[in-house]
Image (tube, rainbow over all chains, first blue to last red; front, side, top):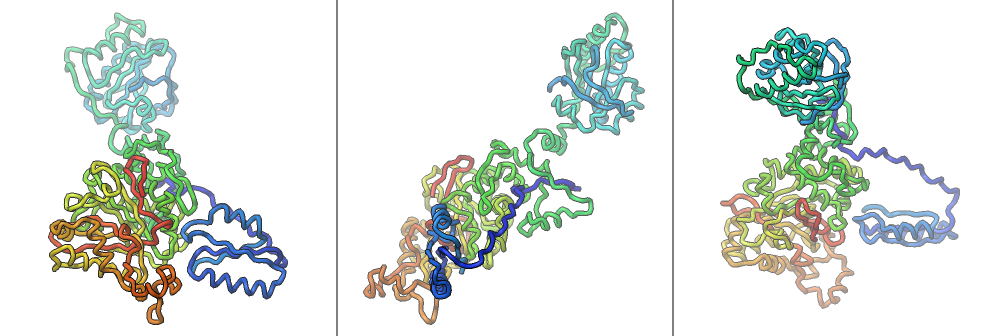
Length: 93
Length: 530
């Protein structure tokens, strides 16, 4: 009878990440990240319109991943971190 | 075999004996079901009695339960030590019992032998008497009645199953965490519930099995082979071996599995995207070179599945590595909308002798004698193309073209597609004198339809966006023929299957280009080609 087996996984304990504290109000610059999925631009265009309409003081800045198939390149992540206060990502179809 | 320098073993009564004792010692290792051990135990007892307190005679028995049996059978009074765990046997690496080591009073091993050679045993008995300070005393051994020689028996530590267990426990090769099962756990239910499997039962990766699997490669068990997405977890040779055991692989498949893991984790193949895509792609492996026969891969009847261990287990091992180490789990980062049976394993060898052309590997720049694996991302499962009537290249290429023209959808051009020609179909092209490029060009020509028919319409929403017309040169290009494939090189041709049937198979690719490019590597050699 088998009583012990070797662990086939990477054995890493999952890292628990807490959410960044939610802000009271929108301010500063919001990154709108298009992951290059079809119609992501349509969604973000409309979202940008609504943001400008309902949060007039807020700026938006558009970013786009070169391909949907891979994680965002580090320069994009760095730019969002440096230039923006919030990020909204348009995921999947 | 190495004479031990120090160890501690208990007698049957539980008395712990520390080796070396003070003064000279004759140490023997024996087992009960060995005629030669039974022949020689009375001789050891005779030496023990004759040397009195001048020399210790210790006998390590390879099985605890046999100590009492041997003691009664031969009326033994010398200390019988319990080596049931085989610690001493492993450390000395004896492969035969009985084995004898004689140490002088400075703990130097001066004589050793195994089996029974009367001349050697007589010399050891005589030297034992000398070391005991009684060179002239009689051992009461009737040497004349004993045979000249008797071979020993295989030591228990080298018995099949035992050897692997000892190596697994003591070699230091295995560093993975041990998962304990409760006595009430069913191993297969347990492994499924832990999320270790692809749904089918897996072979439990015991230490013994994993150690045996590691014997299939010369690479260090702790060598890091790749970083596996999506969790970007390093994978060692040991982790690959664990998943290979689970997949049902044999040790000789290890170099192939390691190579597939290396290819999958390259930037060009991008297994992250391949398995994360909602389109449900999967790595498909094609093997070329002598390794196909060396490890018994199938390129004949049912080559694409099922029934062959190498084909099935090698592809499955890759999938399990990415699942268990990379963390790619359906519903997690594996977002396949529907998936398909080919996502369990899809791996086969090319029938090179039945091909009128150079093999896939040679076409991609390798030598025919190289062992090569090529991995490509396919989202479409195998689809049969039946054409039992065509007798020339043009007719058959036309059938293939019509069959391929609706892949994914009838309008959108696509990229990499794998065409697995049966030997009969390949033979038709060969007899027509067609090259691979002739086939590709004909398929490009036969799948070409006017650009306007590749555009989205109210009646069929698939296809190209109207905006692309500008890229083709505007309105004037609407009637221009546009093939199904972006480039003829997207049509990948290989040969597999049994003779005497005119059926081939097509597998539709995923997205190609920067998403995932077919990638090849020599097995066991870190050199890749895209």
